[in-house]
Length: 178
Image (cartoon, rainbow, N blue to C red):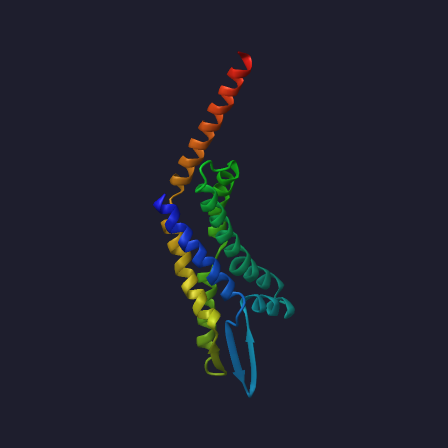
């Protein structure tokens, strides 16, 4: 149960960081007196609008959608797993959760952003936005969330709930025959 409590705390933190990271500017640039700033979603949209549709979709999926699914599924799994009788859907979510971790690539995006910043630094003034820092913290919180989570705790609770449910059904069937 301690694993679930730690994971819940980190997951709630990840939710807050995710919301902040996707609602405030990530980067600002000043080039020849013109200022521009963008969010992660705005960056994906900018790629789409400039003909880089595949890259824009990949950025949106790996930096926005997959992390949201990773965090959302973990929150549902932990909250469901903490119930006295975890519902069956918790096991289903537990099976699909590793896929979201594979596709969630915030850290890859952050390395790409840093490379781009180094390359563009000679041509423009780069102003890091709050989302840039929040995303770096989110990378570590997501890693901590995954490290703290022990799926065996949830599987054991689901198995226990299934056995208790089968026992209850068996007892009611026996009472109906008497």
